[in-house]
Structures are given as C-alpha cells and as structure tokens.
Amino acid sequence: MSQPISDSALDQLFRSARTANAWQDRDVPEVLIRAMYDLLKMGATSANISPARFLWIRSHEAKEKLKPMLMTGNDQKVLTAPWTVIIAYDEKFEEQVPKLFPHNPDAKNWFTDPDAHFDAAFRNGTLQGAYLMLAARALGIDCGPMSGFDKAGVDAAFFADDPKRQHWRSNFICALGHGDEKAVFARSPRLSFEEAGDIV
Image (cartoon, rainbow, N blue to C red; front, side):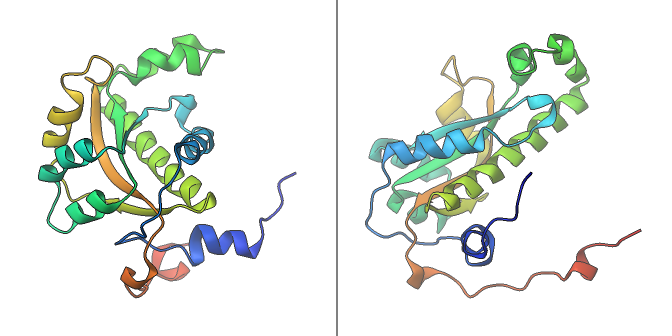
C-alpha cells in the first residue's frame, strides 16, 4: 500500500520548488535526462496512449535555431540553460496504441473523432509535460517552463522536415538545469481550497 512521502520530498517537489529564471554554470549529465524520461513515462495517461514527444535541446546550434521563436526574455533562459526540452504531442499517437494498450488493440479507433483525438493528444501530452517537471524536481533539476514562443515557427524549424517528427506539434517549452536562486521571483499568491473548489 502506498504511504505518504516525506515532508522534505514534498518540499522539493512542491512547497520549495520554484521556476528558474537564470542558471548556474553547472552541466546536467545526459544520464539524468534519460532517468527523468524513465520516471515521467510511468505517469498515467488515458488508455496509456502517451502522446507526448520530447525534443531535447542541448547543442549551441539547436539553441540558436530556437532563439528566434522565443519571446524576449525567454531567449536568455534557453541560451544559458544546459538543456531545454520542447514538449510536443504526436498527431499520429494512435498508431502506437496497439503497442501501448495491448489488451485492447482496437482502442486506437476510440480516437477517430477529430475533436476527441485533439483533446486526447493535447490533454494527455500536457499531463506528461507536468510529469516531466515533477520528475526533474525529484532528481534535483530545476525547471523553467515557458509558453512564450512561436509554435508554428518551432514546428516548421524542428519537426516539419524530419520523418520521425513531422506529425509532432509543440505544446510548451521547459529549460532544465540548476537554477540561480538570486534570480528567483518572490513567491506569488495561491488560491485557497475554498476559492479554487467546492465539495458537493
């Protein structure tokens, strides 16, 4: 049976975790990026469809290619981070359903309606992006998520001409590394339980 995790773990994942705006001059080894993926892939998605796709940006050339698509301010976060990941979703995710949901291979046909297909891809891909952030924090890596970028430009520059990625569509971006605590903003307010919900 599952047990509550320690207060220190909850602090690291939620209470003390902050969005990084600048980075220490410290690398993150690829083995940790792969370990992060091995954690996030275990997160729940509808019928295990796992529609998220990840483009891991590490090289200077790839960062410079991404830079023109970023809002001012976000560009420096990406250029100075050891890693940045483009979290995307696969418009052809259903092709993997027979592999991922083997006890009902016909489940791929649950997504023939275009609206249901988009909802499943976007919602579950976003969930997987959130799992990525939690996995990163659990491994001691800080996150700088951002949505201020030209999605169409990113898709054209990084996905359109690659056979493996031509059906990927960008959702959001997350810079990864060891954050510089001096650049962290003061904690913003949160809604109370009563403000954010009801019990019925």
